[in-house]
Length: 527
Image (cartoon, rainbow, N blue to C red; front, side, top):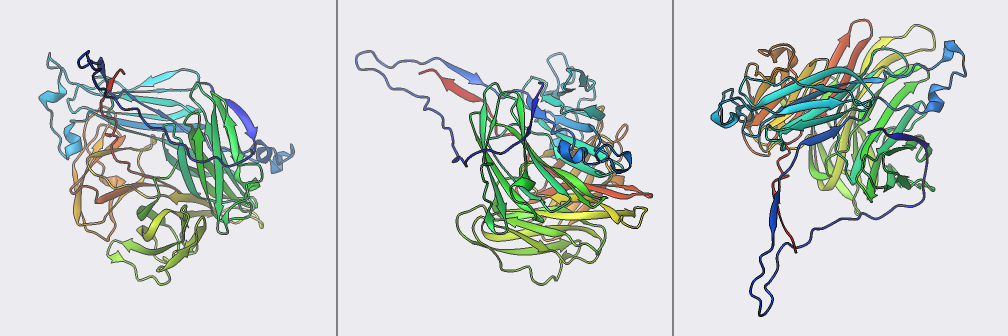
């Protein structure tokens, strides 16, 4: 669908959250007529449609800041993205930690059943995964470069809902917006929260709202700061026409903040929402990220995959209290050997509606888990940087890339993760709230499985699976099937670290999401 783009804008007032319910699907007989039999049909879930966020969004006035002087012209980020997608049949053995075929994955003639995956760009050109005959009920697709904001459709063999995932990646190697960003592809939502983007000088953070429905939508926006809710000053209500896009520059609402929070609630239609944030120190690039909506606020949060490259700039934990009363939180940092003895991370106070930044004094490079336990639901992310090479010139500093890691939901059963289209570089970070295990199986683009990896995951530690261990597939692994030994105990995040000796590393993360199994068949009875 073509999206009409609108300029940056503000609006008027914050709307209350509006929910919708369902009518009862039963009736009683009418006296004298006996019981009335109502016609009934079954609506099964269909294919999964996911939308890419598209390239990093930078306001036109920033790109035009050089005033036509080529020496000072701003180099825009890459206009292309990569898309990785993986889909499994619900009864694929890979979701149970095994590699085996089954008669349940065959049709009546004995032919193997497998999902389908297609990716369509804004011009309608389609890339589809080749059908597989390997009998594992799995399929994956990697599109290394595609313009705009494509759409992925993933379906089970019967046309229904598969166990699936799709991830977009943006990759700009050099220039003003040198960065790497991994983001899970989206479905429209009516309520979304974001956290960790900045509004300091040199930073631009843009809320992007897209309406892919046939109805107009009104989005109520509230920005949160360390001092509480920001005064929106006529920028709290945004109308997004059907098929249109609107943007809000957060710097114009709450300038000068290292990190802010944001909540968006819509009425009329759900929207695709993301935040694009890029940071520079003068002319030195300091990284960029594209942020997807956070999972719901919770009193217990696990953030695996906090990558520390150097001790010169420690990670920053950002907490947000979206509730109406104050909250207190305790923070623990977990390494391979357990909790780190760090002071000053207990009894953190968050008044209602505030954002709090807490530097994490981690001195040793490596990968960590941040655990937050609070007496009320909170949002939490961790900002970290991977420093690169020093740029030439007396006024230029050390360039870096920015990563904003979010909470990883607990996995209750087999789940899948799509890997970046250019291939996995980095590691899978695992953490658990109780002693458990994890089985990880790489999935190739041919639907084949790689070597099975088993890991014990003790509670209170980080356990990693390096990309170098993802072997056995035909070609580069395109996805992972992950099975937890205990329900709702395992949390996982992919940490992508790409290293260029001349420029330094690029860094981003993507959590592993639970399988979408909550859209079961619905019996509908006509009243």
